[in-house]
Length: 364
Length: 201
Image (tube, each protein chain N blue to C red):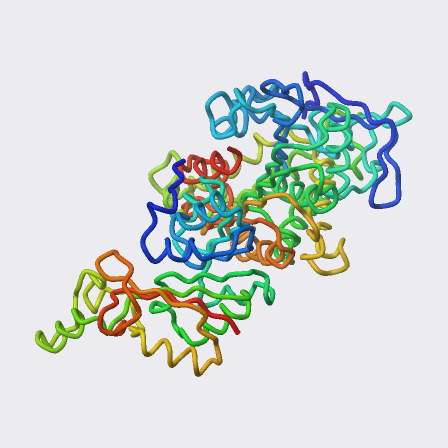
């Protein structure tokens, strides 16, 4: 894993956290696209998902792959960088240039497990500090899919004046027992890897890649749908005509998951995976606001749009509807649509004309 | 993005648009592609919200900048607080409801007033088709065969008046239409293809 980042950075002298701890000398790495207009009212903040980063519409410096949402963000795209100033920042706790367990602590050594446990709201605190630094009082829109949607909701609930529009795709207002369960499998896989060494592996030159790859494999299944997996792989065998009667990757799906797992370890820090999954598991927007989700949005004047996908079983439509009901009860302006797509949770990142139309229309 | 003006609306929607108070809060149930909502926001300064079952139509509404939630009017009205709206509008949807009587209750719970429009099954053309043809009528106002129609609870002007009475709903005003034009209330149960009622409770 490589923490190389060529992004711009914003320094935060001290960031207070939900745990009561304070993160001193924090840093946020970010990318921007397009131009901020003179009254600073055309800024769109895109919040990334668990393993995402700030390279939403530019080449990833480690993998060399295109930005993770280039089909949505760029000149003439639904989020049009000819019109909007688009900001995407690496969240606190991650590993692409923002403060996280792999970054140097006060003593110059990597924080590792000395990094404080953070929450989604802490990530958003970091983003708000960045907006302050950029001189943006109110975003035209905050957009996020999956964990990015949690950040968008958290921003809307806790800093309601900071975004005029809130677009939440394939997300949830709380992690369910099933969501937490899958994350726990991933964390245990990392911590069971001897190379994890209680998180203190940075100096050893050996990182818990096996554990992190298994974590990614388990999580990756939750991003897809049975229908999608069957269509893409079925029971087809990988580069062989018959079963090997061994434990090689006989099936294409096995080979695919192994490839996804090992590729992931090239660009992601195992400890960051622990911290960010923890933050997601702790996320319960209603709990933060006295147990009633509608109260999280009381008095909001933002316009909301929520989108779910019919084959997403990670954050199913019912979770989006739950948020919509709360927004209705709070009297907020809200739109909601469940889109049909074969590829489960990952659908928000894939080709979908209807999603493009909704996003383009909502931010217009 | 095209915005229709009130003169382009279907006659029942135009009647509703003309009689909604300016600057009011409106819920359009079964809002379709949002034509009525667009007119109410642009010409009346209303704060309009919509509920629509068809995802493609919801997508079109969102693309027009309207606030529309995809959902089923039979179940999802329960999620709106009491008197959240000045008006609840149900245009040509009552006859498709699982329980029109319960939907009427919900309309008058979430809205201080309600507009309800529906095709009148007692229009003379429908009566004639059934009387002389002996088959479920397929007419201009009801163009779909019995086996494919969404209209599972056909209703007449007089049926609706009875329901309103049974529900202790006050009929504030009513408008009737035939051949795309407004007609007077005389003999409406025979003459009207479509009816619009404004109710309160």
